[in-house]
Image (cartoon, rainbow, N blue to C red):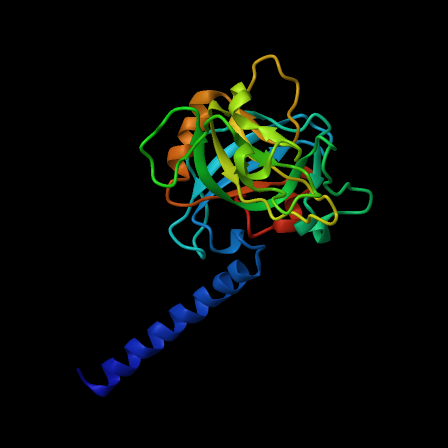
Amino acid sequence: MNVGTNMAIRIALLAMALMAAPSLAFAQSCPAPLAQARHLVLVTPDTMTSRTATLRRYTRASPAAPWQADGGPVSALIGRSGTAWSHAFRAFAAAGEPIKVDGDRRTPAGFYAIGRSFGFAAVKRAHYLHIEEGTTCVDDAASAAYNTISTRARVGWQVHGENMWRVPEYRRGLLVEYPTDRAAKGGSCIFIHIRNPSATGTAGCVALAEPEVARLQNFSAAGAVLAIVPRPALGRFAGCLPK
């Protein structure tokens, strides 16, 4: 290879790097954990007070690549009182938009890693959480176990929490790695779970028809991010979310 050819190759590689740089920089400026995500579950309520939302799945080849649709859209049920910004993402709230607190029955807007699949059946799936008698999600801000999955044998019966084995909607679902604030009682025990056909809203979770929950369990097996963004707020994340 002569010097001229070698130089031409170097210039071409430099040009490619410069073209890619803005996209990479923008990806890095998107909210974590969205910036590096390759699988996305986007939940979009029409307003902050909507009880239903549109859910779509997306994938991309790299953090700099465009999002590509992967099925959907499907209907999701969310909080009975609508949506509020998670304490962790309160900086994105516009004036007058609520911030999530325990007991407000609002689904937390923001960006979260989707965690372990769970359910009543003893499924052979990596990192699967088998919901058995005693499995409890602690929503008691006075407890050091706040916003964690534990058991009644460990935390006792005096600690307030959801007795998950007694909730039919939890026979299949996924944990949401929700970064709460215990001192601010910023919300706890956020899941994706089965939708009760007669329900008009959830206590703050995202609920779907059981086949859709099963699809998300498969879709999220290699890691995925849940984005809950009311439609009026989508423009605040231009370039980070699918168009």
